[in-house]
Length: 274
Image (cartoon, one colour):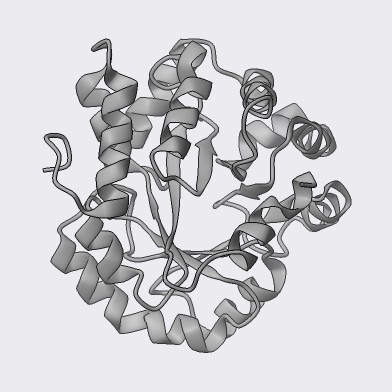
């Protein structure tokens, strides 16, 4: 399978009843040497796609859980080249779609052209850079096209109809639908549900080119199924990192993370999913 088709093929081959489950983890957290092993466990436990966070010292949209994961990863020396190394190692074993997610500062420091070329060569499929709105950095659009990297953008409840249409035009792969305004973090299921109901139909009306994954606040199978009814799938980050944080460095912390993911997928009760 060619690298630049992994995300598209994931959605093209999706059974209509199957919700795509994308999982966010911070590269190098809690142990850089075990990031690849963790991703392989998440995939075998039901993950369809992985969003690999690029740790940054001054995050804007991350809550305490992901802020701490970034801090720990940076303290352990994680940097852009080591992240690309993780992806290259993973590609020895897996064809799961990989999306790098993070802020523009580290990307610019690394070099915009160098970043996208190395990402492509390493086996990265898409990028999410939340603090670069569509069209603000024209070079980014050109490089994603040239390097075969899907540029993925976000819509939120406060995104206007016209803006959603623009974001849909600039995006490729999928649209990241933010279920609630504010920073990342697991939230009360009813809060998420109320927020989603108010604007998901608007998303469906204005986003016609790309599939939609919904995230921010999902912590259980019930949450995931409730808010992804009208879209192609869901994204879980903070709740997974909370589980990792709870059990690391227990010797079976990776297996426990996998059990949580299996429960997200199936709804079956486990000790850690409750």
